[in-house]
Amino acid sequence: MKAPKVDCSNCDNRDKSIFCKLEEASLNEVSDHKIMNAFKRGQVLFHEGNPAFGVYCISEGKVKLTKTSENGKETMLRIAGPGDLIGFQHIVLNGVNDVTATALEETKICFLDRVFLQKLVKEENSCAMELLAHIAKDMAALQDRVNGFQSKNVRERVAYMLLDLAERYGSDSKEGRRLGIQLSREDMASMLGVATETLIREISQLRDEGVIEQDGKTLILVDTKALKLSAGL
Image (cartoon, rainbow, N blue to C red):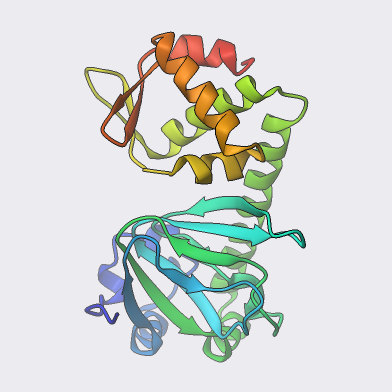
């Protein structure tokens, strides 16, 4: 669904985007070329295996990126939020999407076609450098996740995941650290590479121990210190 266009110079996420150092004329060109779309929770932005036509910059909301194995098992690779660019590998490489992107909540996306982005990156050194920085950031985040899960048992991995989500999307309240993102148990299990039943059992146990609480669909980290101990940190 089309969404009202926001001028790039007035975007709240400009400082986090690859366009943060562009001069006004180039920034206006980006604004003229982009298409803004709105997605509801569960709607797919693009499917793995389909042709890649451009890149998507998240204006509002959160998007999960997943990959499906040959046996049909889905793995969540990461969560992207405001200011993040997804599908950017296809700025240089023409091809197909290697992941599926799905909105986790009400989300607004700016789409820019690949041909325009290729031209912009070639002409604007600042944009090219920011793109490299985004790639490096994503690689570092992936490595941190691998290191965080390596050699950990299920309990430790669940605790580590909750702490990571709380750091990135949490907010403090009188009850504790509230997760500002609602993931299904299936999504959480996919992130950890465990069975959904196993994830549910570990979450229930942490709740029974008073380490976390649940307010509707929102998880609250009540005892962060205990959770860090459970994560082996």
